[in-house]
Amino acid sequence: MGLLIDGKWHDKWYDTDKSGGRFERQDSLFRNTIGENSEFKAESGRYHLYVSLACPWAHRTLIMRELKSLNSHIGVSVVNPEMLDKGWSFLPHKGSTGDTLYGHQFMYEIYLRQQADITTRVTVPVLWDKKTEKIVNNESAEIIRILNTSFNDITGNHTDYYPETLQSEIDEVNQWVYNDINNGVYKSGFATEQQVYEEAVNALFAALDKVEARLEKQPFLVGGTLTEADIRLFTTLVRFDAVYHGHFKCNRKQISDYPAMFNYMKRIYRMPGVADTTNMEHIKRHYYYSHTMINPTQVVPVGPDLSLWK
Ligand SMILES: N[C@@H](CCC(=O)N[C@@H](CS)C(=O)NCC(=O)O)C(=O)O
Image (cartoon, rainbow, N blue to C red; front, side, top):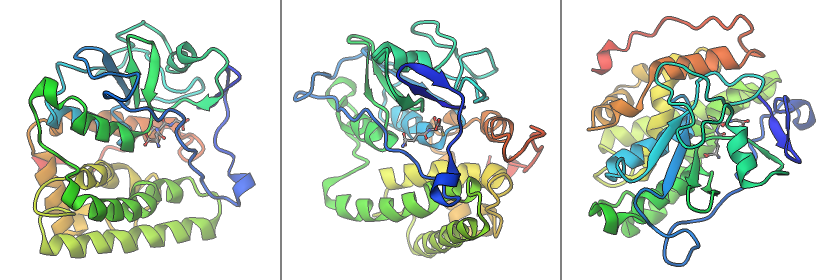
C-alpha cells in the first residue's frame, strides 16, 4: 500500500506518528459531476466504475448502480482484494475482473492515465470517463448522488434516494454516521495510541446505540423508505461482525447483538441485487491479508457464521 508522488509509486502507509497516533483520512481529489452543466454528459456506456468488493466506500456505489438500474449503462472493473506493496492490483482472484478497459496490472496506472505526474493516494471507488480518459469523481458520497440523479432519463428509473424533503435530515444523519461509524471503525482500527483508540471506539458504540434507538421506532434511518443514509450505513454494518469487531478491535458488541439493527441490516441485504454486491471472501481477505501492521501472519479467520442472513 502506498501513494503516487509526482507520478512515482511509493510504498508508504499512513504516518500516524505525525498525528499523535490518529488516522487522518485525506480528502478525495476528483469532485466533478455528470450532467448538462458539466463537461461530463450523461450517456449510456460512457462511464466505468473501478471498485473493490472489499471496500465499504466502493460498495455504496455498487448498491446504487443496482438500485438505479444502471448495470447495463455503467461498466465495472473489480480489483484483487489484496492491497499489498503496489496498492490495489488487477491480478487474478476469484470474483475480480481485472482491468476490463485497458488491461493494466495496478490501479495506480489508472490514476497515471489521468495525469502522468500526479500526487495522490490511489483509492477506490473511481468513476471513470472512457471518452475523455479522465476521473470524473473518486468520492463515494458524491458518486452515489451522481448515480441517483444523472441517468434518470436514460434508465427511466426515477426512484430518489436523496429526496428534497428529507435532505436536511439525511445530511444531519450522514454527518455523525460518517464521523463515528463509517470512518469511526477505521479511526479505531488504525489508531496507534491507546487513548486515541478508546476515544474512537467509545464514539463508535455511542453512535451505534443511537442508531439502534432510532431503528426501534422506524424501519429506516430517515423517513419510511430506504435512502442514501441507509446505503451508507449498511456497507459498514455488513462488514462489522466479520472484520471490524476482530481486526479493528471494535469489540464491545457485534451488530448481531443489536436486535433492531441486525434485522435492518438483513432487510437491506435481502433487497433485490444487494446480496450480489456483497462478497464476504473479498471483504475478509482484504482486511486481514493487506493490513500486515495489524495482522502480520495474514491468517484470515473462518467465522462468523453468516447463514442467519439468508
Ligand atoms: N473518501 C473516499 C475513501 C475511499 C477509500 O479510502 N478507499 C480505500 C479502500 S476501502 C482505499 O482505496 N484506500 C487506499 C489508500 O488509502 O491508499 C470515498 O468515500 O470514496
